[in-house]
Length: 368
Ligand SMILES: *Cc1c(COP(=O)(O)O)cnc(C)c1O
Image (cartoon, rainbow, N blue to C red):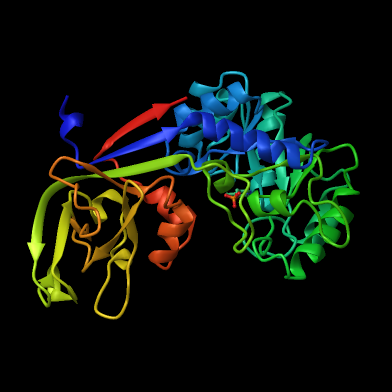
């Protein structure tokens, strides 16, 4: 009931999410397309996203934490679920009870899981992460060469690595990672292999060969963000965020707007005050000051620039060119005219951060 009076409304298009998964799956039809639903499905909601993706045909899901595996399991009883951030000490029983597979990235994790599998007498599967050039998680190539041929003590279900630079297609590192990964996966020829995130999925190949392998792991692209800058996006927007106009007011040329008077309007203006701010995931860096524009909202087809600093709960936008805007109207912050990557650019960040910062104070409406 109080949702009717929220300052914003977030509409999540689960049909567009499913379409994006199908688009990504079709890029390399011989490689399975999984779905990464970590971080509350990049901010949109694990349960709804996982159900929609499973209905579209996704069979394998990746999360980062065991708690996220719980949420994904509840939404997809039959799916394969992998936990990317590895095995927290003592978590073997929990993961086995969830039928979730850890992605093991160090010798310690491999030993703990191996001991659990031997004690349980069970054939619990896990993935092995090898580091091909990111220096974050995963066995070093030398450790992988020593351990993979027979030294694990249990059945690896998947061999994976992660691309560090695939969002910049001209970088040579991606081909170097692909070649090293191809060499390491030859040590476990029976085990399915996975290398690509969203950027790798959209690149599809390097000069040396395909990036698809057996399974791809797109995340952010499912939610409508294009990780490769400067390329036309084949993806549909999934999130629409609208803010309620709580007051329309006049400002005279030269009037300062908001904290610090950081921007003075240049002409006699009409300003709409929106009931949205940092607490809703709108970054302070999206505001404007004299000489530096901020983000742009839309009233229908009319662009309405942000004016002045963003407050914790309030934003002013210039609606001088949209004279019909009145108290109670909704203004587009994200939607047909402003993609998550556009808002990210205005705030000096990336679509991942916009999506995963979407707030919890406003209504979330899921549409199919
Ligand atoms: C988060 C993550 C992904 C998905 O990455 P996107 O860039 O969001 O597509 C894939 N693999 C690993 C190991 C990850 O941590």
